[in-house]
Length: 428
Ligand code: ACO
Image (cartoon, rainbow, N blue to C red; front, side):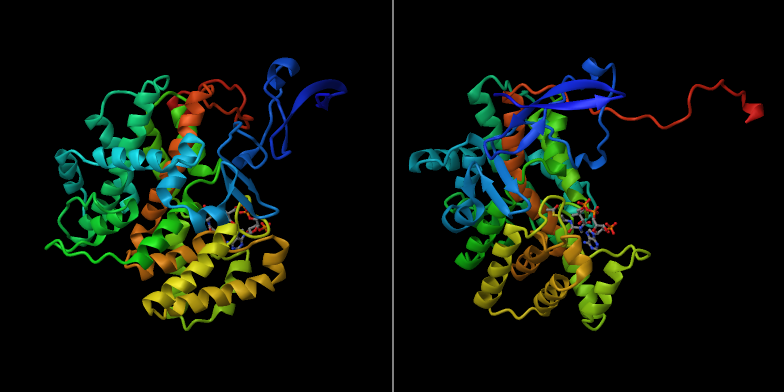
C-alpha cells in the first residue's frame, strides 16, 4: 500500500505521497504543495532537507559512512578499478567490458585536441590567475570552438560531447598549471594511460623528458576515483540547475567549476594545506589551533573537517589517509605536515566540541598532502578535484536531461518591505 504523509496547516489536512528509494530512503513528495494549499511553500536554506531530484548514480549514507557509485562500494572501486572505468560506470550506468573501455579511451584520445586559439585566450591571463578561474573560463570558451549544441535525444551526439570533454579537460588543466609555471603548452602522449598521460602533460620538461612513476599514477588514479561523484553537492547541483535551463554541457560544467572553487567546497583542499603549513610555521602547536576552531568569536575553522552529509566518518578520508602514508613512504618523503594533520585528527576525535557536532576529517584533509608529494602546487589542488569530479558532473547532467527534469527554480519567503509609495529624491 502506498504511504502518505499528512500535513496540517491551520487545522486543514493535506495528504502527500511518500516516495521510497531503493535504499529505503523516504521523502515526502511535495510537488503539489503550493497548488493544493493555495500557495504554501517550504523554507530550507542550504537545502539541508530538500531532495532536488531522483537519481540512480551515487548513493551515500552519511550516518553509516557508505558511498557507492551505481551500487559499487567506493572501497572496492578504489582498489580494483581505474579512473576511466569508474568514469564510464558513472556516466553510462554499468562497468565497461574490455572492448567498451578500449573504445571509450580511444574516443577520448581522438577528441583531446584543443584548438590552438584557446592558447591565445590562456595567454591573456596573468600568470597569477587562479587555475580554477582559468579552467572555468576556458571550459566556457570551448563552447565557441564546439558550437553545435547537444541533441540530448541523440545518444551519438551525447556520447561525442562526453568524450570531447573527457579528452579536453585534462589538457586545459595541465595547461593552466604550465602557464603558471612558465612552461610551454603542449600535449602528452596518447600511447599512455589517461592518468599517466595527464601527469606527463603536467610535468614533462621543455625538452620532452618525462619519467612515468607507477606509484604516482596509481595514487592519482585513486584520488580521482574518490572525487568522481558525490551526489547532489554544491557544484553538482549547480551543474544540474544550469543544465536544467537547457544550457549546454560545457556551460553547465563551467558553472560547476566555479561552485567547486569555494573554500567551503572543493577549495578546502588548498585551504587545508595552507592551514597545516601555517600551524607548522607557528611552531606546530595543534592545541592552539583546536582552541581557535572552537572559539565562536574567531572565524577560524579547522579546514578539512566536517561535512554536510557525513556525520560519522568520510569513507574517502579513510582511504586517502592510508594512501598518504603509502605514497610518502614509497617516495621516501618525510612531510611534517602529515604528522600535524594526524595530531589534529587525534585531538579532534577526543574533543567534545568535534565529537558532539560530529565533525570528522573529510576527503580533503589528507588529499593535499598526496598532491604535494606528487609535485603538484597548492594552487592546483582544487583543479585536481575538478578533474576527478568531471565524470560525476557529466553523469548528473546527462541523467537530468534524459529524465527531462523541469527548470530548477526555487521559491523564497519574502521578508522585505511591503508595498510603499515612491519617494522623490529630495525627500530621501
Ligand atoms: N571547524 C570548527 N567548527 C566547525 C567546523 C570546522 N571545520 N565545521 C563545522 N563546525 C561547527 C559550526 O561552527 C557549527 O557549530 P554550532 O552548531 O556551534 O554553530 C556546527 O559545527 C555545524 O556546522 P555547519 O557549518 O552548520 O555545518 P554544515 O553542514 O552547514 O557545513 C561544512 C559543512 C561546510 C563542510 C563545514 O563543516 C565546514 O565549513 N568545514 C570546513 C571546510 C571544509 O573542509 N570543506 C570541505 C567539505 S568536503 C567537500 O566539499 C569535498
